[in-house]
Image (cartoon, rainbow, N blue to C red):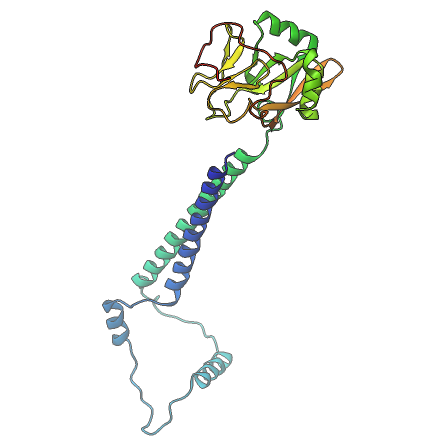
Length: 286
């Protein structure tokens, strides 16, 4: 996964988190402060009680009022009531309005949380390596002897779509030069006579096709050219074709498509293979 895409995902997640935090703080703020409507103020004024205390009596503190209310509650006697039931009074519209606001705020926050959870799960699923086979995992390609025969039957090139890779023969007489150039993960397959190349061109990522006439790989996008083992021969590519780590157990070749090895530097030519016929794209640079 490219670094710009990872940065974009991180920025998007950060912005979503900021929005959720802002919504929560706004909700909490609305619970504590706010302006009363004119109707509410008028209703409160109409229900205010008249102070009947004698003049000069000091105003009790809040603590004194609370203690007196507690004393009255503790000494109150519950008596049975008789007579007609109390008339029903509709609930305060301001209370209902506040309840609706709280419900909507919590719903918005809930939807944000669900959205972030889905986004996070999708990002993790995209970044997590595949464990069940296919590209991104280790693929059992087949028996070495059968693969070599299949390559020869297909005019020197064998494409495996499940691994997005080309399988070609690596000549035995080039192994001495290969040991001075390639890593052990590549040499394991080369010593068995095979190499696994990633299909993408190192220049701009186009899928590189084979050219039956030249017996090279030749990119149709910008003309980059590579010999049969993926070493660069011409065009704007910055290196040879990338390849995968290989293992051989008995006669079975396995390719780890989750481990991409950068292609050899420009000028690498272990096989000495030149074009064997007309080119399919571009012109070779020597």
